Length: 440
Image 1 (cartoon, rainbow, N blue to C red):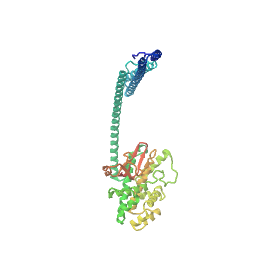
Image 2: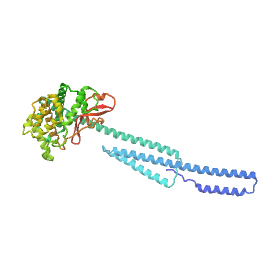
Image 3: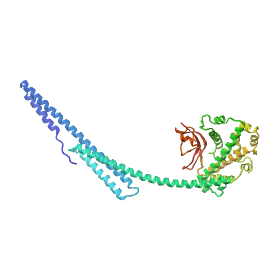
Image 4: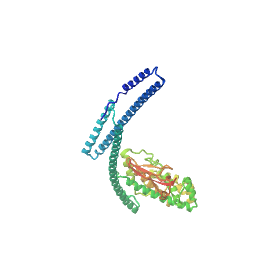
């Protein structure tokens, strides 16, 4: 860096002060006009000395600012070199890495030189020009850094796009498999499509299919229940409000979701427990427990509910589950209103099986939920159930709306009701909860 030694201001100032003392001494005894002239000359000398010191201070400040501008320009060059070094590593670019390394090394040397110049108090002869050039260099380096980062982001976006395309293909394959399985399921109405399934081949698609199989029976039972209530003169609006008075349904037909929510909440209560809270005997652990539940699923999937009741004895786990859920879900007042007596309730209490279409629909729903529970504990770790808290903001990851019209209105959709619970399988798979939404 070109530099010059500064003038010795203290030496020059000393001469000026000495000259001032001499003038004061010589003006003693001089005529008044001469004294005035000498005094003015003395003031002029002092003013020039002050201006000289001020100019020197400004010059030093400008030199320091120019030095700092050079430092920042050099640091921005180091940053650009480091960014170039990173992007040259993936994909590997030996020439690019060497070029970036040279830039960083040269700028570190330059910083060292600037440090020594500062310590030796070498002042830049044209600091304003130096500062402008350094600031221009800094801006160029920043622009270069942004260009390098932009290229890196563009490369990452291309990689993400390829990953998305791959996942879309996998999702489409899974959807095709699901549609094929659902078609076979709806064709024969049973779970015989799982006849050749082994626990090692179990995947989330199987659970999703059985869940839909179970929810279909829930909706069939709810429809039968609502029809019976309407025939018996029930106030459906009041009955829906008794489930949750704070839910505002945008359409009258949406009130069926209140009953579906109530039935699912009661039927899935205890789902997270291995014995569904009705199994008192100790269950195996680990792989043995996984195999135990899978074997139960395979044995019971083709049996009718009545056969499950009489397979061994009414005291079987499924029998306990079915009786307890019926007695809790179907209130005596409802049964009395629908059928005119409590015969079904009394027969269930005595471990019998009522021969009615209403109980057939209920027991089939219970059977499918029991099978879903067996399948949930056939996974390792087991599938877990979750409900969505009322008032939660809608999330496409964890929720699925049971209606579409809410998205046509303004406002943020919030959960008013969890209709069907959601499930998590392993750490990565979520089967969305079905929710009824309202807008805030």
